[in-house]
Image (cartoon, rainbow, N blue to C red; front, side):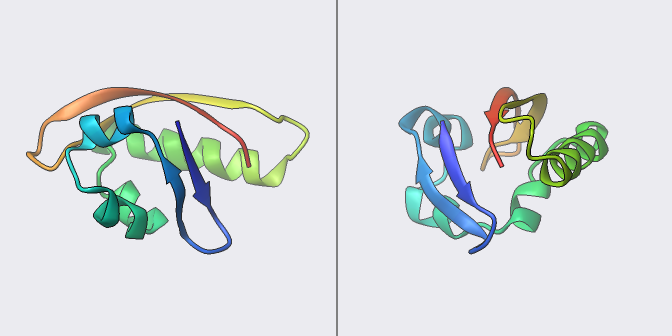
Length: 87
């Protein structure tokens, strides 16, 4: 799990599991902006990820959102990520 603060544009919390998948040090990931994160999402998944985030931001009545997408680690390898998120 993780907690991303959209108002500040950075992470408030990152789990050890996500850190292992990404391969980055916690300090680097904590400083990543939304656009930085989008650069790590597989190009074939990016439009769907952006669409679902925009939909969640527009409708707060859905308190849990779910996405599956590929994210690139620091070595350039993609891993499937099962993401449940709240806005």
